[in-house]
Image (cartoon, rainbow, N blue to C red):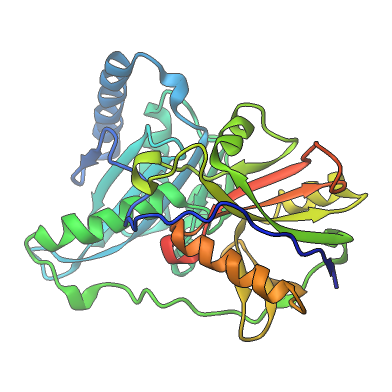
Length: 340
């Protein structure tokens, strides 16, 4: 187990609750179309956006996708299916209805490939969160002509925000909407397993950092890590607001950060009833990071309280020691309450 180093968290900030991470940016919503025609439509839309925005470089190569039925019945009495693809920066937003009669991996591959072919920036990674569709999505993406890393992950923040918006504002206004057809949002809590020895540091501490510091990290990022997108207007954050986090200290900080970069970390959560700190990764993995004891109980409670006030925003950092100014790994995340 880690030896916990209690540290006072500063700057408690109360945030107004919001339901979404991102505002709609250039909504590219299309009805079911033949793939060739679809590619032409997407390309025309992308060219139009490029003319309006003047900078394709804003589009990220990190994409997120979902392919699933929606709580809306079509004229044939069957549930409508949608393919949704977004990029991490919110520049690409492709929404396409798919006939239920052609829901298969080959059709899915064809339509995703059409989006990729038309996009000004090609994906290097495509994340998806829906475990029920893992087999079909994995098969479809494995057949792409583009070299893309396929990653099951809960770090689909832009996608989750868009789905929340559609579930609240779009689907209920569609003809054929049925609230009883909404998928069960309850998450199965997997058993926490022992954390691999390669990820163990010597000490850790709960700390807080100004949001302005996190913005600087995005401009000059550490060797390992990833910042989730945060819409300042949606979350109501400002540069001086304090973001809660967990810092791991170790003489092996670089190897640990390298290992953690492959975990698809989604959340650090303190189970105050069981007095455990848990690290949620990929689609369903949960590691027992440490047990909470002594003064750490108050630190853990404060950490969870600040997370809640900030709509789930928090971070994990890896450094060699408390005296070092260098950060070898940094991950900004949004907790499950705002990422489900």
